[in-house]
Every structure is written in structure tokens, then in C-alpha cells.
Image (cartoon, rainbow, N blue to C red; front, side, top):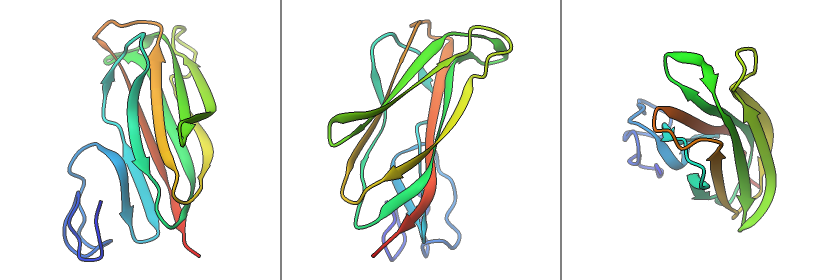
Length: 146
């Protein structure tokens, strides 16, 4: 996570010249904005942690965007995926996306508010464990202090 002198994922002064260096399963802070990116995960029938971090002395108002288990290059082929959001070890939300049908959305976005000093975990389980099916998640938002 970048500090006042830079470092973390991008280096340099926070908010200036920070570049994307890959998935950030922890919460990355840039000025008044924050994000966490899971990168691609192989679908699995056992729940897997995609994002894990603890918020700081701020609250975050933003969105969680998830992509259900889909086969890259063949977006009409997919399976149901359930995403579970935990705050301090307590499940506070569950989202299900079913990408089995060609006209079913594989991408879902919902609003979120993360309180200060909260342990956040986003987990996913799919109806398949076939390695060619992948799912992704991201949290993006604005942070407010005081």
C-alpha cells in the first residue's frame, strides 16, 4: 500500500505517476481513491478468497464488480458463481451471477460502504472447478476521512 512517500504498487508521490503493476489483493490508496483487484482466479467449487484487506482510518464508498465463471474467448459459456463478502469475519452480503445462458450477465456491480478499521474478505465459489473457467473481482471507490 503506498504511503505518503510513494512505494507500494506504483512508487512516486501518491497520485502522481503511479502505474498499474498487477493485481492488488490488498487495498491500494491513491489520494482520496482506493482500489483492490483480484486478478483472474480459476473457478472452484470450494470457496476461495479473492480479496483480503483491512480498511484504515477512513470509510470507503464505492462498488464491487465481479465476473462470474466464464471461459475466456467464449463468453457465452459459463457457470454460476457466488461471491460472499465478509466484514470482521461476518458475512454481510452474497451475490450470485449465473453465466450459463448466452443472454445472462456474467458481470455484476453493486454499491458498497466499508467502515473504518474493518477486515474485508471477498470469497467466491463456482458451480464448476474446470480450470478453463475464470472469475475476477474488484473494489473501486472513494475514501473519506474524519
